[in-house]
Every structure is written in structure tokens, then in C-alpha cells.
Length: 432
Image 1 (cartoon, rainbow, N blue to C red):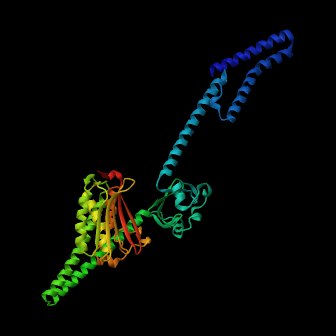
Image 2: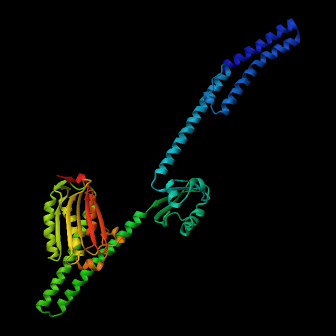
Image 3: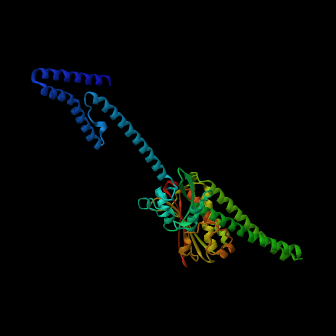
């Protein structure tokens, strides 16, 4: 400021001197003209600089404007530094805003921001999918106009946000279960968080069904055992009749034992999600064990064919592989009528995958049942399964064993013609 003031005083003095000289030589008119002209120079220079500044302001590029000389150099320099700082601050805020938006978009939960009038200020893509919203179309729309479920409208209206709200049968195909809760923030605004609990609801339903099925499966043999025990205790039976009752009781006890063993096996498999070991298993030895067990279970009522088309071994857990193979063979025996044929085969297909298949000539399975056969306790014919000693857990065990060995359980069946169950192992699980 001192140098600028000095320059201004110098210019004023110069104007007075020039005017005095003009007055002495050419008269007062020239003195006034020359004095005003000299004093107008800084005004013209200032106007030019202000015009240039206005041009760069309109193009939003003040920070790129060349600096003038003189007094305006310092003014423009400070202005440019201020503009750069403000723009950098705005960029930082925008980057933070973008990061927050990206984080909200990456969230597996739906997020909706509501203003004080319950109008949508922002929502992420998950919330759009959950509720069928479109942010560009629905922004500043009241959310209770867009989600017309009575329980949701009541939740929003009553403002009881301490507990979450469960909405079922939501989404495009009415297959979602959503848990949502509103949280107040800012000036009477609310953040609506929506969680997809469909899998949790299904798991809870499966747990309830599992407990009910286990209770039902255990209740039947226990009831039979108690009935036989009461009969033996209250009646004076002959030895042959008593022995017959004891045999029936042993059969029911064996059924409960098989059920408990299968439940423990399934629990161990579900608790261990790691891939199975890669021990080398001789399939030919397993086929011999399977033949002996199959003939003992069938007691001569079926004809068997065990074929080793290829000699490749399987890499895995021998106990689990034997359990899976045995379950498939025993299922075929139980569901195939007397005099039926059962073909057990091991081969390597054209893609280099190992295939253990069991084909029977049983009644076959309708297509609507195929996708549910590996569910625990799922039976196509419940009464026949119990009569043949099945627990309803065999295929569930096979499925988990296949998963631990990166294998697939493939099921083909035609009602009236029989079924084929195939365990397909990847070529990485085979060895010469």
C-alpha cells in the first residue's frame, strides 16, 4: 500500500507541475486539459484491469488471469490465491461427498434420506430395487405416497421408530422380506435403513421345520416303543409273542439310532465348510464294499450291476465318499420294487470329470420334486420312506459331501421308468 500511495502522490505532483508549465506557456485551458489527462491515466488503467477481471470472472477462470503491473498486481494476486483456495475447498468437499455416496451405494442395505416432510431427498440403488423407486423421478416425493403398505404408512405416521418394521412379500416378484427402521438426524430429517432379511427368514423357517420334523420323526418310534413296553408290562405274554414285540422294539430303536447318526453326520458336515482332504481313494475297493452292503440290504430281492469303466481314483475324504456312495445305493434299493435292477457305475466322462452313478428301475420321481430332494426330511412318499427305514436325510448328506469335494449331485428321473443319481467330480479331484 505504501508503494501504491507513493506512486499516486508522485502522479499528482507530476500533474500539477505539467499544468503549471502549460499555464505559463499556453494558458489556463491547456493547463486544465493536461492536468486532467495525467490524473485520468490511473482511472483508465483501473478500468482496463476491472474489465479484464470481469471477463475472467464470467469464464470462471480468475486464477488463470495474467497479473497486471502496478497496484492491481497485488490485488489480483490476493484474489487469485483466495479463488484457488475456495475452489480447492469445494473440490475436497465434493470428493468427500462422492466418497460418501459411493459408500452408501456399495452398502448391501437400502438407504433413503427423508426431509422433515418425509419427502425423498436421496436414496441408493438398493433402496430403488427394494421398493421399485427411481430417484430422478421420485425425488421430493412423499415416501408414503410411493410405498402404500398399510403397516409402513402407520409406521411413518405414528413416528414410533424405536423398533424396526418387517415388510414381507416386497420387491418386483414379491419375494423379499425387508426389515427397515428410521433414524432421526439433522433438522427433523430421517435416515431410513432397509435390510434384506429374506435369507434369515428362510433360515428361521427351515429351523422351525427342522425342529418340527425331528420331533415328528422321533415321536413315532418313541410312541411305538412305549406302546410295546406297556403291553409287555401289563400283559402276561407267551415267549414267542414277547420275542416278536422285542424285535419290533429293536427295529424302532434302530430307526432312532439311524436318525441320530444321520443328524450328527449332517451337523458335522454343515459345521465344516472347508474343502475336503485330498487323500487318494481307490474306487474299486469302495465298489466292492458297496456291493457287499447292497446285497445284504436287498437280501436277494434285486439284481445288481457294478461296473468300473475307468480305474481313476478320487482325491478326498474316504469316509465321506463312502457315505455318499452308500446313501445313493441304499436309496435305490429302498425305492426300487422287488425284482428291480440297480446299475452302479464309475467312469470318467469326455470332459475328464469323474462320475459315480446309480440307476434304478424304480417308480421314478415327478419333475416338481427334483429340486427339493436334497432338503432335510423331504420325501416324495413319506409313508413308503418310513416303511423302508429311510430317515429323510440321505440326499442332504450327499449334497454336503459333494460340496466339500467341489462335486455336483445330478438327478434325472422319469416317472414309471426309474431314476439316475450321479455324483460328478471335477478333474482336479481325480488321480491315476
